Length: 134
Ligand SMILES: [Zn+2]
Ligand SMILES: [Zn+2]
Image (cartoon, rainbow, N blue to C red; front, top):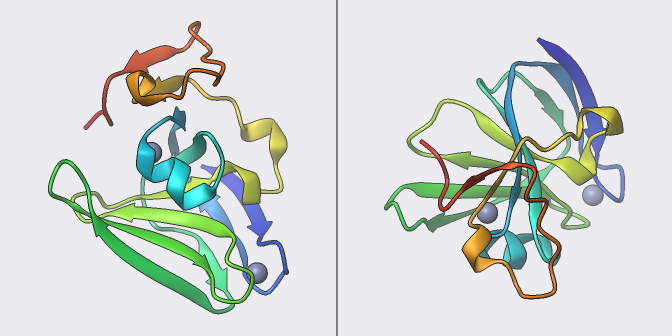
């Protein structure tokens, strides 16, 4: 287990806890681009929802290619994208940009590389998945 903490842009939402990090991924899917406003999203995937989250969040549900319901959880005040969850999994995704421990942001894979926009650098030393691995 790894101890992590973090906060949103305005500081209203704070989180901390011990998480079992399954993977760190750079995701080039269209949804991550829209959800973050950045050209790709970096997520730490935690095995279980073990974080303590304080503050008011806003959730948005949408349907993935897989048919699963994906939930995006943002700060209700400043809108920072913070967490994601998938109806078919017990864990959660934590947006890399909101955690305090920058040394934990070591992507081991990239996903949806074929959807990356042409100018986005792809680290092809990482393991590649055409879609989100199960
Ligand atoms: Zn905020
Ligand atoms: Zn994505």
